[in-house]
Image (cartoon, rainbow, N blue to C red; front, side):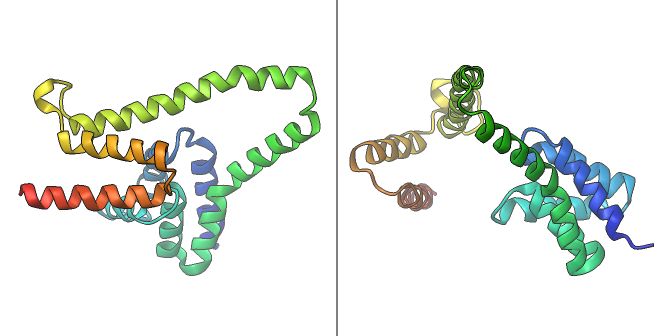
Length: 187
């Protein structure tokens, strides 16, 4: 029996139940590829996660591709990747259909209107978490732990994006280069 259906089904489960993003998928991927099927050792799994984080794209999709290619070659990569994205593809397509079909209904508009503050709050929480990481570098929130280079780069980036309307990619690149240069100068 071919391993492709088993690979497909394993990553359909990962794609369907990893609510919360790529990092939420890691325990599910580990359960499938290390514990249930023993396709990878724990060491290989940690290497896989490292590579999946370094490459562009969602971690779960990258991991599915790498596991698939390791287990069954190119066909395995295609099958595992498709299995991982299939649940999201189905759910988003269903939601798009419902939205376009019923977008003029007042009930749907009021539900979406009620969700907007929650979405803004989630984005703000993520932004504040990143800002805390930049300002305190993962340490306790205390005045002596403030990373002034990070604060200065954040303020400069914020100012440039608000006043000059530069490309965010350019600003991110400049902040990265500035942080690297200042880090090298500081030792």
